[in-house]
Image 1 (cartoon, one colour):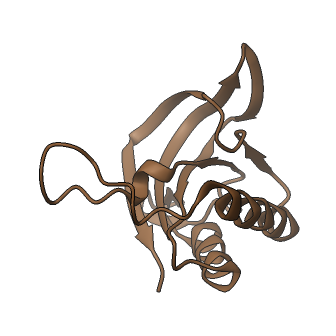
Image 2 (cartoon, rainbow, N blue to C red):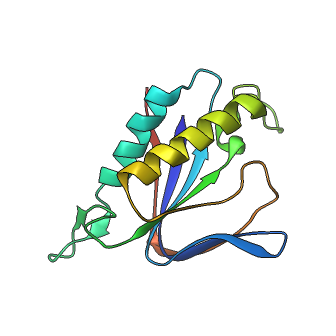
Length: 146
């Protein structure tokens, strides 16, 4: 399971002309789910995302997590994060979890995230999403859990 985190001043997801998720300051999370992933790994990753300190504290250092920074989290499913890209000129999506299984796990992770943090927004699984963001920094991190 992989998560690409971007610290943002604002982010939103638009599907069919409608905003499905919107946050001001916070974390835009692109979440990739692999064949070997499960709810336990996902909860571990969500916990890490919520505790990850990459917002400026009083000293201007990356000392605050999203809650301490009074931010929100926008979770967006993105199977392309699971692509193998080491060989050739075309991505191999073989490592990604099949869509039906991934959707169930993604929805369980969204429910878990909402139980842990009140300001969670989302895109729509497998939709053609238009993601708008204002990256703050830019600050971007790739997180993975075993």
